[in-house]
Every structure is written in structure tokens, then in C-alpha cells.
Length: 490
Image (tube, rainbow, N blue to C red; front, side, top):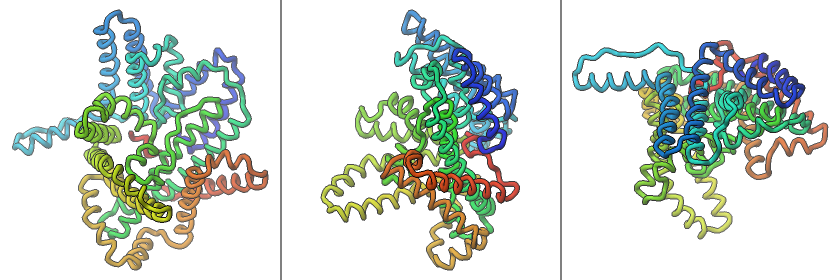
């Protein structure tokens, strides 16, 4: 069941009505049943995997808390973490490592055959696995008590708004909310509906529309020129941002309608002026997860500069592998690791230089830093989007030729992609609306809260405009364009 489907448009109000009509002590049963139904709508058999991960991590945390010795606590911790990681490795990474080892052996002239398994990647496995890992580790660290109620814990793992693609919630913040007797709050319901509408605008109007042209270019690199590569890469930057942040907005809005508060996952990442700032604003729940459970345990920045740099690079390398079992993603993570390492040296010097500048010069250099940061992020996105590593390298080799005849190249590229006239206006208008929303959020505050304080004609005009844009783009989307969210594959 997709967030951008008519089934979900029926499912969410039905769950919300049932939730508020039931006595508080039975609400967790409804939410758990609804969450499992939501997950089983993709593949009913995969419910056994999430049940296994839920049960083993729940028992492991109880074992950690009840163990009398430190050795016993560690045994329970390693067992719970190990079982969760084994499930993740088997379904997501077994074929990748098998093929990599086979290719390496063949380079040494060893005649080995491919050994791969025909397994389906369970939807959302990386997200709910990370939630169970953080829960067991937090109990081991003494940061929270183990949850005694298995049903409530199972709901924490499978809560349907954030089950499939996050945000990756921490048990210490989400579990207590299931015990709170939420009441219908008109203001929260209104805000949630607005947030869902904006998420749908991002997904349908921006991401799905951009996907048509991005898929065309990346699917036929030999038939397109360097300028088309450049335009498609820029569009993909907006596609993936709106696809993933749109999902997060719908997740947060759905949870808010029910009375729950989920972690904000994006804060205007493309307005960043450094890679470090970008990762403080992009996929925040994952960035903070890697910071707390990978980077800091490795030593963080506490053991000298070179170990700090090593820890940064390893963390981003693991993050790249988390995103996908392909060398493209490993290189993508490694590139961001190298850029983050460069920031360690560059940012202090930039800060000192900026302090010596006047107000006008500071603004000019801030814009320049933003442009460089955005360009670097877009270059990294090439490895994320390309179907193969060779495709990514081909784009990088040919991309500089886009500067040879920019004006003529743009016109030819737009015609090749079919992005002309009205289609170009729609795409540009959608991106302008997105940029405007983020600028308001960055400098003036929450745009949805600001909208709710406007007069009725303004509020309804914006609502109708957003809903009409979503409806028209959904109806005119070409057949065969996948409308699933990109991060479902992770």
C-alpha cells in the first residue's frame, strides 16, 4: 500500500476514526493490526521476518536487563544484534558479497561459478532493523528500560507511518507515546493534513514528474548528450529529495493526525553551504543513527585528527553500503566521506576568512559556498542514480563537454528529453514552489504553521492550488512510470 494511493486515502481515516473511538487500553491492538496489514499488503509472507526480528530483539533487551553479570549482558547484546544483522545480511547483502568474492577469485584465474540466491528484498528491512538495533543497544547502555509489553514493542517496530522508509525512530522517544491517551486535536489533524498534502505535492508534482526525464536520460546514455546528463542529474537531485522528504512529510502528517510526534527527517538540505551542514539536514534520523552507533563508538573526534578522519570515512562508507548492495553506493558513501574529511580542514579556515570580510562580501561568499556544495552533492548523486558503475563513470567523463556550447546544448537536450513548452513550465514552477517553501522554512519559520495563521481566502487558495496540482500531475503521468518511493529499495 503506497502513501500516494487511493487505498491509503481510505486506510488512514479509517484507522484514525477507529483509534479515537476505541478505549485507550485497546488502541495499541488496532494500531498493531493496522501496521501489520499495511506491511502485508506488499507481501504477506514477509510478516514472519519482521516478527522474528521483533521477537529476538525484544528477548535480547530483556536478557540484557536481567543478566546478573556484564558477560551475560554482552552475550544477550551480541545475540540480539547479531540475529538482526544476519537477517539483513542474508536478504540484502548475500548476493552482493558472493558476486564480489567470485569476481575477485576470477581475477586470480580461479575457475569459480556464480552462487546467488533468488530472494526478495523485504520492504523496509533496513529501517526496522536499525530501530531494533538502537533499542537493544540503548538498553545495554542503560539509556532506557527494556519494554515488558511485547505488543507495544512490536508496535514500535512496525508503526505503519514510518515502517517502510523511516524516519528511524528511537525507542526512548516513540515507545512512551503509545502509553499516552491521545485525544482528537483539530489543530493537529489540520496540520497533519496540510503536511500530507505538501508531501504528496513533493512526490507527485516534483519527484514523479522529474522521474520521467531522469529515467529517459539515465536509461539511454548513448542516445543523449552531455548537456542532457547535466540536466537529468540536476533533476534527479530534486527528484530524490522530493521523493524521500515527501514520504517523510506524509509519515509525519499521518502520525500527527493520530497524536504522535515523529522525528523531522529533512531541514532544507539544499540550502547548505558545506557537506557537513548538508548531512545535518539530510535524512537526519539516519545521520544521527550512524553518529550515535557507528561514529562515536569508533572514537569520534576524541583520539586525534587522523583517527577522526578515519572514523568519518568509515562511517560514510558503511552508510553507502546501507543504502544499497552495489559498488555504486559504496563509492557514493566514500565520496561523501572524502568530502567530509576535507571539511575538517576547510571549514575552520573558511570561518576565519569570513570573519575578516564585510557584510556584503560575506553574502557573496555564502552564495558561492552554497553553489559549490550543491554542485558537489549533485556529482555524488550520479553514483546513486546510475544503473551501473560504468554508467556513472561514463557520465563523469562526458559531463565536462556540456560547457562546449551551453545555449545550443540546452535547447537540443531539452528537445531530446521532451522537456519543452508547457512541460518545462510545469517542472520549473514545481521546483520554484519547492525552493520557495524551503526558503520560508529556513528564514521565517514553519510554512504550514504560517499558512494556518493566514486569512481563510489565502488558506483555501493555497489548498486548492496544491490539491489541483497533485491531481493533474497524477492523471497526466505517463504510463509505465514507477510511482513507488525510491527508498523502498533500501
